[in-house]
Structure formats: C-alpha cells, structure tokens
Image 1 (tube, rainbow, N blue to C red):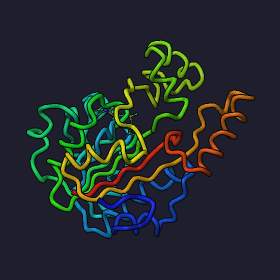
Image 2: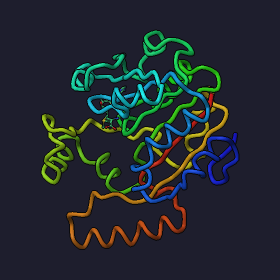
Image 3: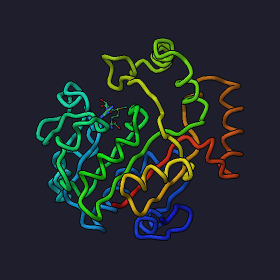
Length: 255
Ligand SMILES: C[S@@+](CC[C@H](N)C(=O)[O-])C[C@H]1O[C@@H](n2cnc3c(N)ncnc32)[C@H](O)[C@@H]1O
C-alpha cells in the first residue's frame, strides 16, 4: 500500500502537482480543485457526492461544463430538498446495512465527501459500502476533521446539547434553521495517523491510499489568549508533523 509522504502513486503525484500545503486553509481552498484534477486525469465521470446535502460541491452548470455525471447522496431527504434543483439524488445512510442495495455495485467512478465522516458512527461500514459501489480503479475521497485537535475533543466529550448551545452562541449560522446547522459528531476513525485508518481501508478493498494531514482551524479566533496559545501549539505540531494533533485530513483511496 502506497503511503502519503512521497508521491508514490498517481494520486500522490496529482496532489503534489497541486502544491499540497499542510495549512488547513489549503485543504478548504483546494478540495474541489483536487477532485476535478483527479477526475480529469483518471477519466472518472460517474460521481457520487456523499452527504452533499443542501450545499453540493458542483453546481448544475459546472457539472455540464466539466462533463461529470453527479449523484447527490444524503441521509436526510430534507437536506437534499434544500439543494438546488437538477441533481440525481439517493437518500441513504452511507454506513447503513441497506446502502449497498440502494447504491448498487460498481455504479460510480469516484465518491467524495466533505465534513461528513465525523457524523458517521460506523466508519468501517461506510468505507465498505463505498468500495462496493465503486468500479475497479475507482477513487474514494474523504475530507474530515481529525482527532485530537482540541475543538473536536471538546465536541466529543461535551454532551451534544451543551456543545450545540456553545457553537450556536459563537456562530449563529450554525443553528438548526440557519445556513450551516450542526449535525451530531462521533469522530469514529477520524485520524490522519495512517496506522489507525489503513487497516479498515485495506479490509474494505482499497489498494492504494494517500493520507494528507492538515493543521490549524479558526474555532478559537474569537477568544483572545486562547487563540494565541492554541496557535503557538498548532505551529509546533505542524512543524513536527504531529499527526495526533492535526485538525483535518484528506484520505484518497483507490479500489
Ligand atoms: C456538516 S454537513 C456537510 C455538508 C456538505 N458536504 C458540505 O461540505 O457543506 C454533513 C452532511 O452529511 C449528512 N450525513 C450525516 N450522516 C450521514 C450518513 N451516515 N450518510 C449520508 N449522509 C450523512 C448530513 O445530513 C449533512 O447533510
């Protein structure tokens, strides 16, 4: 299995050519571009966006321009109903027992998700279902927050009601009726440490895996003192490549 630090396979080479930078801003700014580049270079046309919800990655006119065939998935029919019109949609729990039957075997060439994996309580089943619905040579891409970055540790430890109230107080758009509601988070297998995630990916049927860690976040920026202390620690973690304290990761796995 090829790993992440060297561009040891074609996905690694594509990401390196895009100028991978371990700062979290790079992850957010380049997620879409990375998917476009992988899909283009590997000729992956049939796309499944997992947990695309109300805010799909590609708008309908972009899909036409790029020549992709995109299906939107979400566990919530309500979230999908808030997306712009014009998508094929499939409602299912990506980790559910019925997901294989609903999605179909070898139906997609690439399946990707952004900020979804932390909400899935059984990530091993999620990867298995994705592998099942990907054609041979297909690519799975998950962009997710990682433990043990302090904001996520707090979110996991604090009861849902309290963490929801805290988040909604600091970021009002995170209310249920806002533009960016909070979904319960479990952080199952949300690590950038390869030793913790490669076994389940291998078991699910993926052969090559690239894991890219990122450091930093903006959660503490409204708290003077904590902001500076946290930024200093994050800088050290990033310089020393302490994956236990990364804040996000890309996992890009080829079937
Ligand atoms: C934080 S939102 C992210 C939405 C979008 N991917 C984005 O980046 O803006 C998480 C989305 O994942 C969906 N979701 C949560 N658990 C899921 C599951 N098990 N299967 C499919 N979708 C799920 C939620 O309904 C929600 O739409």
